[in-house]
Amino acid sequence: MTATAQTDIALTPAAAARVAAIAEKQNKPAILRLSVEGGGCSGFQYKFGFADGVEADDSIAETDGVRLVVDSVSLDLVRGCSVDYVESLGGAAFRVENPNAAAGCGCGSSFAV
Image (tube, rainbow, N blue to C red):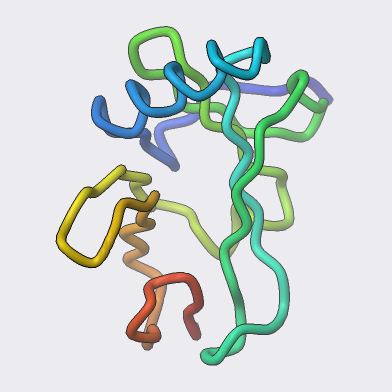
C-alpha cells in the first residue's frame, strides 16, 4: 500500500506557514505528523511531531508545499479534521478542529468520540 493524498484531513495556511518556519530552523522536511493516542482528560489525545518522511499507510494533506500526514489507525479518529495554528493571549498552538469529537477538554489537546 502506498501513501495517498486525501481530502479527509486538512492543513490551514496558518498552520502550514508555522510548520515551514519551524522545519527550516530545525533543518527538517516540512512534514507534520498528527497521531492519536489513548489518554488525556477526555480519552484520546492528539500528538504532533515532525516526520522525516511519509510512511506507506499515511494519508497526506498538502498546503503551500507543507505536508500533514496521519497514519491509517489515527485517521479513523480524525477523518474530516482540520489542523490550524492559533495565536491568542493564552499562547500559540496547533489546534485540531475535529468533527468526530463528541467532547473535548479545555486545553484542546484531548477528545472523546
